Figure (cartoon, rainbow, N blue to C red):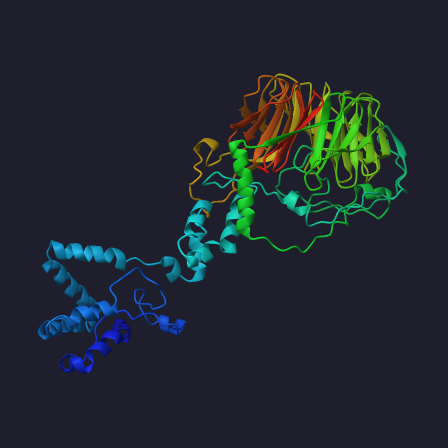
Amino acid sequence: MQDKFIEQEAGPLVDFFNSPKNDVLKESHQQTFTFRNKPTNNTTIAQNRKYCQRHRPDLKRMKETTIDDLKEQVERLPESEREKIIKIWSLFSTSTPSCRHLILEGILAQCCLPQLSFISNRLQDIIRIDFIAALPKELAIHVLSYLDAISLCRAAQVCKLWRRLADDEVVWHKLCEQHIDKKCSKCGWGIPSLLEQKRSKNKASISNDIDPYLAYVTTTCSSTTLDLHYPSIDQSQPSSPSPTIPSTPNTPNYDSQDDSHRVRLSDDKISALFSDSSSYICDNSIRRPWKEVYAERQRVEFNWRKGRYNVKTLKGHVDGIMCLQFDDRKNRLITGSYDSTVRVWNLETGEVIRVLTGHTRCVRGLQFDHAKLITCSMDHTLRVWNYHTGKCITKLEGHTGGVLTLHFVDYMVASGSTDTTIKIWNFSSHRCFTLIGHREWVNKVVIFQKSQLLSCSDDHTIRIWDLTLQSCTRIFDGHNAPVQCIQPTYLHLNPITTLTTIDDDQPCNRNSRNDDNLTPVLISSSLDNVIKVWSLQTGDCIRTLFGHEEGVWSLAVDKLRLVSGAQDGVIKIWDKDSGNCMHTLTGHCGAVTCVALSDTKVITVGDDAEIRIWDFTGQ
C-alpha cells in the first residue's frame, strides 16, 4: 500500500526525467522515486485519503525544498552523478518499509557529523505536523476543549483554521458550563451567571396594577386557625427540591416562585398574590456567541477578584435602615427602616419610586416577589402590600411582641418575634400554627426545602424544625452570643484548590466534576464576632471564620461568595468554599444591619440611614 502511495506522489520529477533532455536517464531508470506532490485545487477528500500523513496535498506544511529546487540541483550535476542519485531514489522508493529502515540505518551509520547535523536541522522543519488541521473537526474540537480561556485565545492567533476551531461554539459552551456559577476544580475559577440581568431583557414587564377587587383584609390569629375568608385554593403536591442554593431575601434576586416545580393556584383574585406569574413572555432574541458570554462574565469575576468596584450612595430614610431586598432584573430595591416606612427605589436612577406607610413602629424585615411585598414590624404585625400601587392588602396579627423576621415560600409565611415564638401562616389551608422552643428573641427564620424551618435566636442557638411534625429536630449550640443571621447553602467541603493557590493561567481539566462534594450547610453569624459553618447532615461545626472585630449582624451568600456586615461598619467578602477573606469594604458610619448580594453587586444598609451600592461590573 505504501508503494502505491509513493508511485502516485512521484509525478512531477518523473515528468522531468522523461523529457528529451534526459532520455538516457529515462531508459536506465523507469521506476519512480519518493517525493510529495503539490496540493491542487481539485483534490478531493477521497484522493487525500490515499496519501500518508506527510504527503497529503490538502495539508499545508512548513517550508521545505521544492520540486523546482531539486530540478535545478540535479541539472547542475554531471550525467554520471545524476544517474547515481536517481538510482538511489528509485531503489528506495521500490523498497518495502522494513528495507527502507535498513537503508536509512546504513546511511546514518556512514554519515559524519556535518551530515548528521544537516539531517537534524532538516527534520526539525519536516517532521512538524499541524495536528489540528490533520485531525477531523470533531477530534480537533475535543482537543481544544481541554484548554483554558487564555490558551484558547492564544490558539486562535495561530492561523485562520485554528481561529475558526478555537472560536467554535462547542468549545466555549463547555468552558462556560464548567465555570459559570461554579468553581472549576482545577483552576479554581468560577464566574457569575448574570442570568437575572439577561433575563430581564427577554421577559415582558408585569402589569403594575393588581385588580382593585383585592380587598383589604385584617386577620387575627387565634389558637391554630387563621380565618382569612379566602376562596378555596387548590395546591398540588410539591416535588422534592433540587440541589441548588436555597433562596432567601438576602440571596440575589429572590423570588418565592422561582422553584422549578411551582404550586399552581386557582384564578381567584385574592390568590393572585401567591400565584405563579403567567405574564412573563419570553422573547426570541438572537443567541449570543458563547465566547462573548464567557468574556463578559469573566470581566465581572476579574473585578470581584481584584476588588474593582464603583460605589453609589442613596439617601432618603430619616433613621437607621434594618432590612432590604433588591431585584437586578427590574432595577428594584426595597428597604425598611426605623422611621416606620418602606421605600421602593429605582436602582438605576437612585430615585424613590414609592413610600409605603402603615406600620407604627420600626420595620425589621421584608420580602417581595413579582406580585407582593410582605413586611414585619415591631408593632407586632405583618403586612402584605401591592407595592406596585402602594396599597396594603392584608394585615396579619397574632404575635404578642415585635416581629423581627419573616420568610415566605409559595403559600407559606414564617415569622419570628420578640415573644420567642415562630408562627407559620399557611395561605393554602388558611391556618396558622406556632413553634415554641427558643427562650429569647427569634432573629431569623428561613424555610428550607419547603418541609423544614431554620431559626436562630438571642439564646445563642440555632434550631431546625420539621414543619410537618411541628417540632424541633436538631439544635446547633456553639456561639457565645446572640445569633443574628443564618443562611443555608451548599458547599464544597474539600475544595481541590483554594484562593491562595490559584494560578490565573493554569489550564482546566474538563474531566473533573464540580458537584461531587456538594454538601448542604448552614452559615451563621453572631455578636461573638465570628461566622460559623455547620453541616446540616451531621450538625457539626465544620469551619469558623474570623476577621470581624465586632458582632456580625447580617449575611448574604451565593454560589461563589459570602458577604457579611458587622457592628463596626465593616463589610467583608469571603470566598465561600475556602473561607478566605477576599476584600474588606468600609464606608458606613454605623453598624451594617443588612447586606444583599447578586452576581454584580453588594448592597448594604446601616444605622447611618444610608444605602451603599458596591457595583463590580466595572462600567
